[in-house]
Length: 178
Image (cartoon, rainbow, N blue to C red; front, top):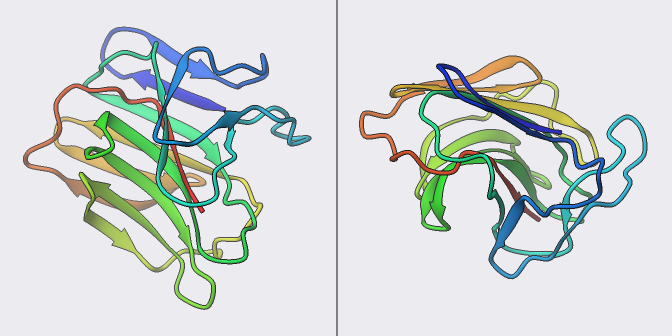
């Protein structure tokens, strides 16, 4: 379930994938995406069939927005190693974007991280409870001007500013790496 809401004036975008299609989305990279039934409570979800790398599924209908709230439910599939799942916003290309994601490490500290163009803007290694495979988490990003706030299950983990924010670019995409 993905929602992108423009906070000032304009439109609201959402996709729960219950129609079992991703026709309003485009893929970057070599990933193949599908919408299998994951069972209750999520039912139909979007997932990548690729096993390694960064993959983005970018909305073709959400448009470019300035101030917004973006929420999505994500989970890291069991892979036997480290896993990542999160949101990508103000996306222009694989090299120009923000990412907010959960990181689950096998034998290391789990954390949440906010990155811009591949560089870390903020992160925290204090995640309670510990990030688990095959568990649904609700991620939320609130961006107003230069302020970026990132939440996991309605708990604020990152509160930062970016003095040179990215331009008005696509806000609704999914990031998955495993």
